[in-house]
Image (tube, rainbow, N blue to C red; front, top):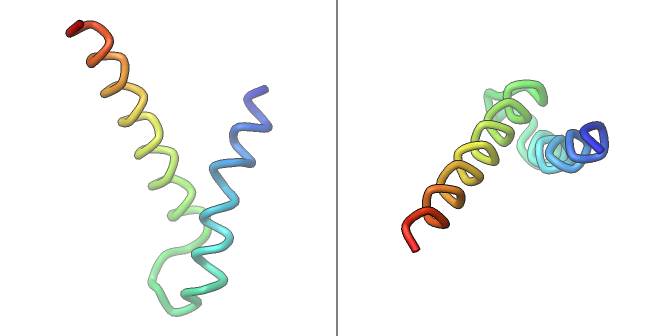
Length: 52
């Protein structure tokens, strides 16, 4: 399950790197940023559930 999710989050990084070869981010850095955004979104969703 984790491996599949990891691959899902890495795919946008591969696409971004292909579209922006001089973008200043490696595929690894872009994947790390996407993973961080996903975790932040999960945390925000969890906090919203608690506010109901």
